[in-house]
Image (cartoon, rainbow, N blue to C red; front, side):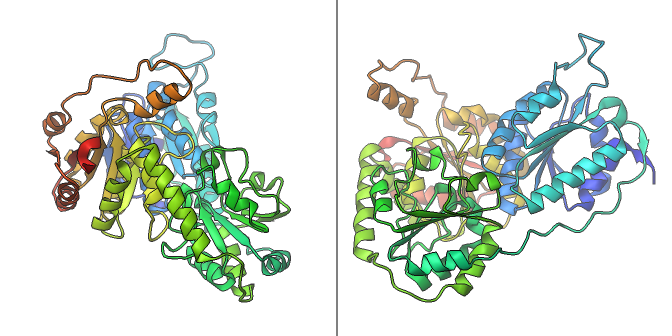
Amino acid sequence: MHRPLGAQISHMLRGRGVEVIFGIPGVHNIELYRGIEEAGIRHVLARHEQGAGFMADGYARATGRPGVAYVITGPGLTNILTPLGQAFSDSVPVLAISSCLDETAGRRGQLHQMRDQEGAAAMVCDWSHTARDARAIYALIDRAFAEFASTRPRPKHVQVPIGALGTLAEPAPPPSPDPSTPEAPDLAAAVSMISAARRPLFLFGGGAKGGFRAARTLLARRQAASFTTYAGRGIVAPDDPLAFGSFLARPDSAGVFTRADLVVAVGTEIAEVDLWRPSPGHSCKLIRVDVDPEQLAGADLPILGDAAKVLRALAEALPEGRSDWTPAEVAAARARFRAETDAERPGIVPMAEALRAALPEDVTVYSDMTQFAYVAKEVWDMPAPGLWHHPFGFGTLGYALPAAIGGKIGRPENPVIAVAGDYGFQYTIQELGTAVELGLPLPILLWDNGKLKEIEESMQRAQIAPNAVIARNPDFLALARAYGARAERPASLSGLCDAVLRALRADGPTLIHMTPDLAG
């Protein structure tokens, strides 16, 4: 059946498993909206394209399926570039489809005109291309989905000229079978090195989450010690006596790495935002496992492959053995790391630990760049991976609320909370309207210290007189109620926990206002 190309695109996406599209319609992309309902796709109207992009990101992280966003030419695309940059940094499969002008070289002054729209998106995406006809857009969408399934997932952008969106087109071809990643390579050398090590130390990143059960098996079989990055939390069991946790960024964790005689890094970039120092601190051999060849440079034994498959193969092949790591030295290090964290940002650790104890075990957390999250990411152990999502690499503000909306839409049966700071929350506060409109039972924990405190403290450490770190805040409770949301200001830790549990049962979002004096 011939339809306008914009409608065929929605039908194609539905045939590839897309159930939800996030976006904002505009005069340039209305043809994309012609076929959404007919295709059986749900559309979520964001209040800003940045919110739409973060919603698609949150949806993808919650479901493991690509998040899709529709945006208009020019400012619609530029508004979503920050979320696309975040998705690139954190390896999240997001597909942005935008309209574009039919011709820009010989005309100036057109609505939403940019000098190089395709090039702008290419700076924050894995790739960005223009599809000038049906055949091209179908091929690019299938390429995006194939790469999401078989390589490191990163955002893609496809743009279609306005005129082409309205032309009649044949339906897209049937979907091809999903490509499969190669089986685990020959691991004999890795098995030999791990078996011979007396103090093997594993480092798990977010790329290893699909193999967390195998990771736990091999750690127990080999009695190896471990760290996780923030994105890798939950891969290692919280009660593992040889787990150093997610304290990787503690300066003294480098001392732990000096005591290892083999480091095995799985599914991690070992990036600056993981360590906050040039290297982990090891002087021993390094095995690296990653699906991205770029991450294997410098390893003594590089293993290119899917982390889950490699971990399962290692768990089966490794013989049982004992290591020289002891639960006592791990417990002592964890206690020291926790004390350092508490001393750096006083009052947050008790709040985080009270919430962790009170909330359901399967709660999913979306956090923003805020001091509460910086502390919680170290002390809040997760029972499984994929339950805490944060703008780790790009480090944008305004992520938590829209991403949590996307996550709740993707997994409506799961409890979801958002954690934001008073300043960053105002980047995307308008998405409260979306959460209210959808009736989402979403607690929003707002950490309000009345300033950009992390920046203030950075200035003080640099001996710079603090400047531009205090902004007049609104009455957050009144503002939330104006949107139609609930709002509470608890007076104690027990009141905080009760408020969050009530919010999880509500028929709409609840803003929960937290201040530093809450811990007493």
